[in-house]
Length: 416
Image (cartoon, rainbow, N blue to C red):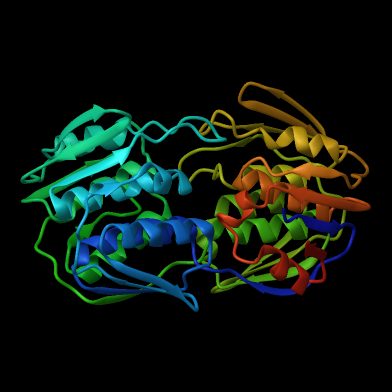
């Protein structure tokens, strides 16, 4: 079993680049099924979730391989329309393949996604959208079975702006007959990136980034290249690490507008933030301050995927910061591990109250989930003494070489 060993209390200094966005790569990999040709997805991070998506594509009859930051996919052949339970469990967001497999193969069978460390992720919104497009859906033996001889464009109103349901609907609608209009669509930047890829395939789609997306279904056969957008969550993690260690760091290869709520919060905490064309410079020199309540919401609100890391930065801030989690019911599991470092956190339901303490001290802790694990790394960097973090498989789902990036800034961190 590997652990991260971190000797905290060191100031970070220098520049660090951000890799491609996990949450953009995965739906684009699913969308590559629609191409019926060759796709080269560039700026792709080497993550366990990406590896699982590549396995799914190969299982379905495609040829897919990650090599030096590029995933090459040949989707001319689709020989299966089922994704077995073991592959579904490897990647919790694997339901994103449902719309693409159904549209391309006329049927799709996936095992029912179970709950994960953040609580259940119901697929009802996904299934309702596909049903609106003409799919017949049954559940049998723990599997979801979707069939559709012909998907038909229609108006799809999502009951919640779910990112995954928006993406699944976009994928299915790309091969449907007629026009589909999605209302109450998710507005995340990753939706916009998926739109860019679909447009490269020749699909008429517009509206990504707004609550209404319009897709005109078409016959697709294309060979394309696409470069995914930078990972705003990874960038936010570097910024939080700089804040808690009172450091001077430039984060490069980013789209600053994607992080506006995060940089606003860090500025309110007392950090100096300077935005460049594709960079963010953060300087944290004095005592951090508690800030107004941090309330997670769908984009453009504060991202749930950054709430744990910002909480870690607030552990030594002067005063009390309130965090309200509106997306995942179990997003505060990491707080028990942060308390082992000396954090003062009180949790009641979906509300956590963090009162800053003068010092944190190293301890042995366990990563509870992907972003909770990142929060432990941030907190450990700001703690005195040595912290050992286990269960790194969670962190590896979303960070490509996190310890190497932090070490390049001067952090004393190694994987043992």
